[in-house]
Length: 404
Image (cartoon, rainbow, N blue to C red; front, top):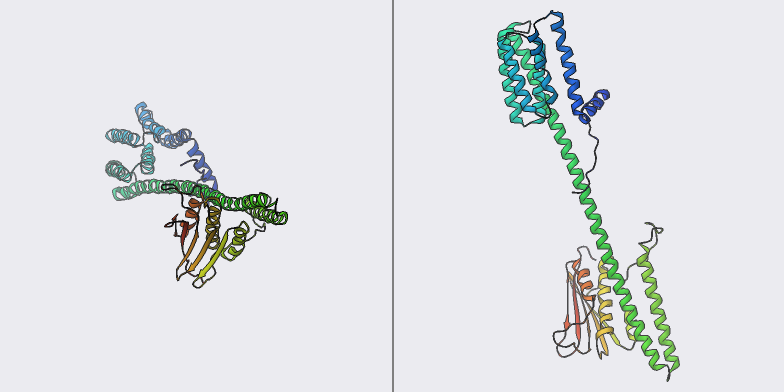
């Protein structure tokens, strides 16, 4: 999934008591040191009753330490430490020696509940509850007798169990948040990459349409000027002026298109509007200037289109005219038909040039670009030779809802 996002964990005590939250963070970073600190604190606290009671039996001191020392490994071998402590506590019970070090069993139960499954936590709590009953029957540590002892010790077991479960739920929730955040960042980066690729493809299509059409017109005008210059210099001069105008127009469109890539332009940089079907007359005038008759027919009820769909229809006509100029051998006329239906816009561009040899097609990436444009709106493009002579490009663009 790539780089994971580092998220500062929000501990349950952050808003209640900041010092305790800081201690918990330190314990999470230094688990071995934290375990050693817990062992030391329990050892000091539980040794007080032995010192005050003048206990001088060495094996009682050994038993006391044996109930505490395994906690050093409680995070690595959680269940094993709990079972070892239970076995030592049972030995203590058989020896009839009450020890305050039994508190380590609560720490071990908390660790099982916090780090193992719910089932293991319940089994551990049940085992410890058996120990509570045995200890209450033999030692009755509470001042209220057997019932008070059972109630008090059971409360401690329940608190340790639910404390561990609550901690485990908190950590699990944080892990899910971290995982989800990392996934969202990955998906965001992927969307950004796809957006960049899509923008590059869009710019490539626009550049192809602008350059291919304009250069085709400029080349045709220049060739015509060369042929007519010896006999009619004025007509050749007019042709070169038209070629110059077409070239300047192409440069202006390229500046507009590439302006969005400049870092100094910013989001507020003024951009010229995209061309649309309303500019087809100017496009056809360029074709007529090179000596190819061009007709435009419109049927149906014309209506405003969204800017992107309007530009796509214009580019389809532009690319089709470019192909006619470049590849239609012997063509004398090109016809553009725009038909408005209730929910579909149809654009047909045909010429009367000689069809290519059987099995061949007119080369270039124009048809692919047109197909990609139309596919954005759920339409389709078909291109191919007409019966006898000529080539036709037919595009079908579904009209968006709300088009007036």
